[in-house]
Length: 351
Ligand SMILES: C[S@@+](CC[C@H](N)C(=O)[O-])C[C@H]1O[C@@H](n2cnc3c(N)ncnc32)[C@H](O)[C@@H]1O
Ligand code: SF4
Image (cartoon, rainbow, N blue to C red; front, side, top):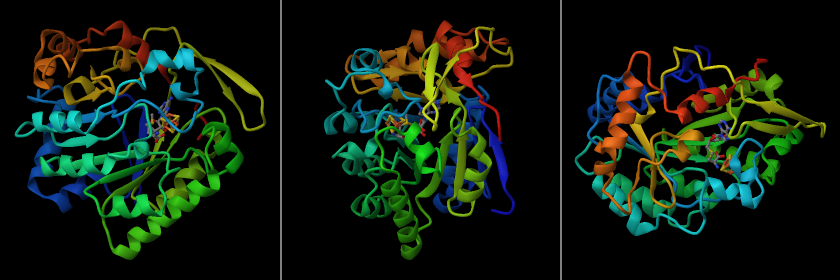
């Protein structure tokens, strides 16, 4: 990627590196309706367009994971983890169809089949994906740890309407990787990624666009430049994410076995902090709760539940509408959870 460009999002959580903006590439492939969706997305991003329905849905069809990554609530002991979700309830095929049916003829354009979970565990995933495409969803995301991205999963994804496959890797060094992505199998994951990329080339597919990402952490921060340089030559885009601490203080284990305690800063967030997620998207949790964003704090900000009300009613309801307008204010009137969210984003620096 010779002409690398950079995009920094509103929260500075993620830095993307790419030769060509993935949204523009997709617009070329998908055509005018996709361009229109991105226009609305960008306008909502600056509070200039209030959609009639979330433009993007994150659907957490179940709560659970096969790994216990150090920066994720799944690393918590079961009792504390229970505060983050329930594995007793799930969005089954009927629920997913109902959600997607509600989005017909609205501003809904994008779905990410994920939440605090690993999407490839869901046996109905490809039925959900096909149904989303059948109701006109143009941009279908999967974000995966790639442990289950075996040959069969690769074929299914490559022959599906998925537009973006986001693979979370965090490190190219086996020991560092295993100190972050606890419970994973580095060799298998690398083999899976390699197979997927080779097969995509063999089949001559432009989609899905592939993103490889790393969360910048105390244990891998020194290697981010090399990580990005390695993957820039091989995939469509690379994402380096700042870490969001999911609680006030967290302890990270370093590759040498030592540990480091990190606390959220207590200072008020930068007054320029703006967040437009509540104008663009919602996350629907496995129990039907509707969260106004995809941040850790947002998972505790319940705007309504899809089993009690329609998504439109939740989206346009007094609670959500007020929350949304408060973000547009100058300066924004931040909910205490949003203040905590701003304080939770840590840049461990080091290139
Ligand atoms: C919660 S994961 C779920 C998807 C999948 N299991 C995975 O790991 O890719 C979604 C994304 O959030 C990232 N992530 C996890 N913990 C994070 C944290 N504390 N701060 C920022 N991003 C985080 C993951 O690396 C992944 O790219
Ligand atoms: S693989 Fe994803 S959902 Fe699972 S523990 Fe890691 S970050 Fe969390």
